[in-house]
Image (cartoon, rainbow, N blue to C red; front, side, top):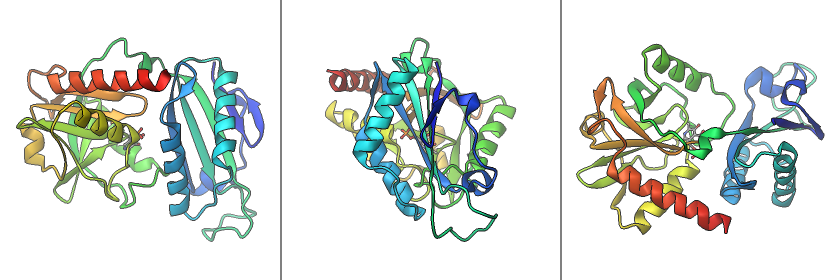
Length: 282
Ligand SMILES: Cc1ncc(COP(=O)(O)O)c(C=O)c1O
């Protein structure tokens, strides 16, 4: 069952309403998080709450709750949803103003919204490699902020779908950044490579966990720039994202990557990631 919280009220998601003067609605003036929930427990919650705080700081919006208050709210949301495996979405905006005005209001009453929805993808029953294309990364230069202004990401995703793909790997200034809503990894010459953290991409929490488990498993990891040429030569490719964990990519621009199936390095990091989840659960 999907459940939502909006400024103190619990209700079905379809029932939740905000003011048309909400700066989130008018300007996309807000930030969000998506937290995976396994067996009713939020995974890497501390890291998500830290990134939420970092995003709020970047847009000069105060954090309306303490870490303990967020934790209590999140645990209540999971309990109310009755879900075991879920995606927990949290959004904070600068609230409603008296008129439409770019200038931040002096007194902010935040809009705090949360929804918890079943996420069967987290059960990982069928993992079919995705088909990707390459597209220009025309998004803004503050990709490290988890901003709710997502029209550019939406345009990219829909362009990929129009071209018969699942998503796109993005190229900015001749370098690979990430995907519309995921980080990207390639395997080339025996190394697992992902672009370094920068203002051009979201510092994905799954990305960091995958790097951690890969290193612990003796896989050579490189955080460095990837050129479009290297992307074409990749022996394997996968994306990472909270709701998808590490997910294989089988083709790029219509050409198979390796044999088009999930590769051996992906299989190994996925195995290590599942072990990490079990540890967190115990
Ligand atoms: C642009 C972008 N990059 C990367 C990610 C992956 O981040 P995480 O692993 O923290 O979910 C996301 C997640 O939604 C995203 O929107």
